[in-house]
Length: 204
Image 1 (cartoon, rainbow, N blue to C red):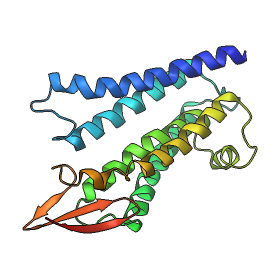
Image 2: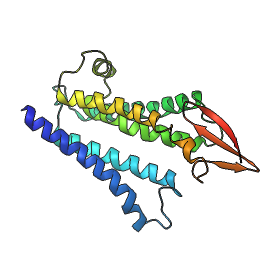
Image 3: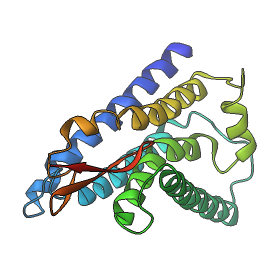
Image 4: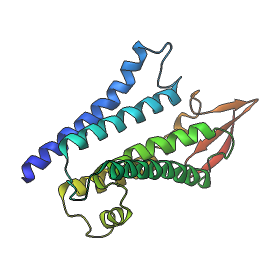
């Protein structure tokens, strides 16, 4: 049983990676002048939607956590609405965290919120697919010795890795501050935002 779960888990992660790769190339056939760098907000939205769709389909097919609760239509609708509220709350929560760490409050607000959405996609969506809107189960998973299955262990690792990855991804930014996607030129100065480091000014 454990080997079967490992294989299912491996296929799930591979398909998620594949969906990210497809979100890079497929839109260019339908959207004019599509580019990750030039139209990064569009790509973030497409990536978020594709990863969310893949997660929903895979978890519905694999069903790693079969619930014994009633499954009436009203229960499913209520559960779905709760999941939507959890996801939106997660997006706004991460947005506030980014602002507190130095992101501009008004300027580049859309970019900041897009980052919050993509982070929620890789952290909150898997939690909702596996555990549902059960906050106590979430606390159990991310507390010490709270994991009871390989799916929950994978959820714990991928969620923590997403947070660590988005933090570490900020460090190389100052190395390429002269790139058009890293700076906003105003006269002889460039405004540079690095998560966790705030908004700084670089003189040319």
